[in-house]
Length: 68
Image (cartoon, rainbow, N blue to C red; front, side, top):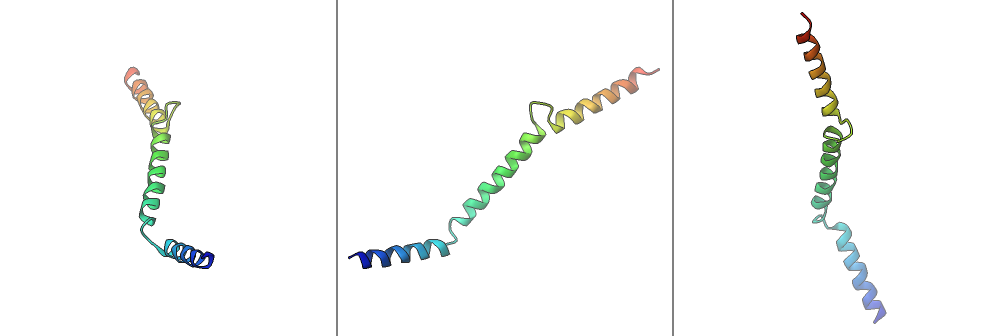
C-alpha cells in the first residue's frame, strides 16, 4: 500500500515539475510586480520622480517668464 502511494506521489511530482501550465501565471505575476514598482517610483507621494521633474520644469518656466 505504501509503495503504491509512493509511486503515485513520485509520478504526480514528476508531472508537476515538467508541467508548463503554471509558468505563464508566474511570469505575469513577476511582470505585474515590476510595473507596480515603476508606477510607485514615478507617482510616489513623497517627491516621486515625475513630481520632482514637473516641479523643476514649472520653476524654470516661472523664472523665465518673470524675468523682464
